[in-house]
Length: 350
Image (tube, rainbow, N blue to C red):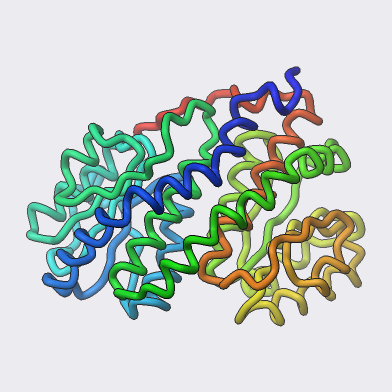
């Protein structure tokens, strides 16, 4: 098996600070032009169509556009457009398709139907010449450069940045753009510690199942870290809101059961901390990613993130420790993280 630094996945994870800085520099005019078009149309709500990693980005969008832009956000049900051929009425929505490759037929179909009904459409993709880019009225490029590894890393954080910039432009909020300007540095704080995060995963080389918990803007982070663990390490990793986890699934936890907790510093901190104290009493094995000292003190394996990060931008950096631990765990299990079994870089679902 290769060492971490010999893998394409490692290289692409470490590219993220550069990718995000480039996106901020080169795509602001684009997102502001799209935001101008949206303000003129005044959509009633936002409908986001996505699959896989992009669907996790869409979960971030639900919190972001709701909290910042006061817009209700729904996630599309693509099979209504494809398999059932019974699309709902969406002509008064802003329909956003998110796809790294831009090639998933069901996501393209949602955008096609939206245009047919007269809705304003936006494609967020890393492939400007893709079917999604050709179908949507407006395109926001991820600008991540070619992503070779099957597991999406830099295109995930680039999709979050695209959504965050779009939201800030819709709000015409210069202060939010200033907060976004600090994000590449927050991510670099994590990538600079890549070796220690990869090494920390060795402790969990026999792990077969775990849960990943967070809440609020980082609900998406829990889903994305769980997805990376599934596709790279074949661990049964289940994501939960820390609130939902207490409605039954907490019964899973017994002595030594692994729980990965993403604890942001913000409105949900107290509630997630309360859960961590309960889990510690149950003798769970806690992996904690946080900037909150109390949370870090409860963990068996911890990574301290940059302090005083605004909660709304924290998902861009809080996911990166999970990416690196998934890489490290794959290697600890003797797996090739660049070639997970039965997976291809582009998945076309209908």
